[in-house]
Amino acid sequence: MDIKSLTDTPGKLPTIPKVTQKLIESFGSADVSVGEIAALITADPALSAKLLWLANSAYFHVSNTIGTVDDALRMLGFVMVRNMVLGNGLASAFRNTPGMDLKQFWRYNLYTACASRWLATHLGTNSDMAFTLGLMHGIGQLQLHAVAPAAMTPLDQQLNVLDAKRHGLETTALGFHYGDVSAALAGVWNFPTPIVNALGNIPDPLSAAEFSTPAGCVHIAAWLARTEVLASNDKEIEASYPSAVGLRLGLPPVWAPALMPPLKDLTQGLEDLLA
Image (cartoon, rainbow, N blue to C red; front, side, top):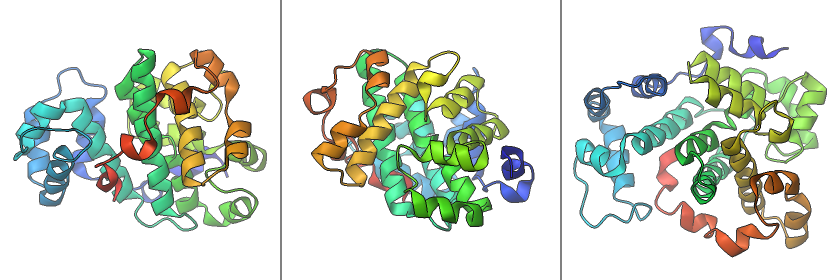
């Protein structure tokens, strides 16, 4: 098995909703039509309802009720709406994935995305890109389980899919890891090259030829999300902290409890994004 065999035929690719496909195209377009995107979202009653629900959620602290998709786009901004629809589309595409605790996985993913965005803002780097990377960084794991469940079973018995050492186990067993698969999927879907490259480097950002600060943010955020969803104890949290990546980003060793709000607060109101 190689990466190409996981993505080389349409039957092996997850089905992405039309509006999500359009939004993916917009990543590489400077003249995207916001009106066209609004029309596509409006034409999907379930997606429109979810977007409006999220726009009025506690996460955004709006003072007035957001009643239309156009209002949501104006208030939230196109990039945030795009990320919200992208996350929902990815969750829908991988609705049935053998061997995965999807509820746990998507909670971890949402925690990672929101923590990545917070960290990137704190560090003065591209917070929108960090949020997108956080949403997408684990989809390779879903694709591996969807297309090659038999190969994943013995690996799952050795390590949880969220374990920090999982990418090393996969590299030894397969010759590549879930980050490589995430990057390959993003390439097939025509995401911009910086996003594709960053996805492949998130599991080990310091090994990249050129360090990506957003990828580093996602790596740190994934550590924090992992400790939360796996209910790690204080000793495990301290021992697993990726200090070398934190140092590269200029973060103090005890940054998380001192600076970042609790993950449940960062994601409050967004729980339905990936439901």
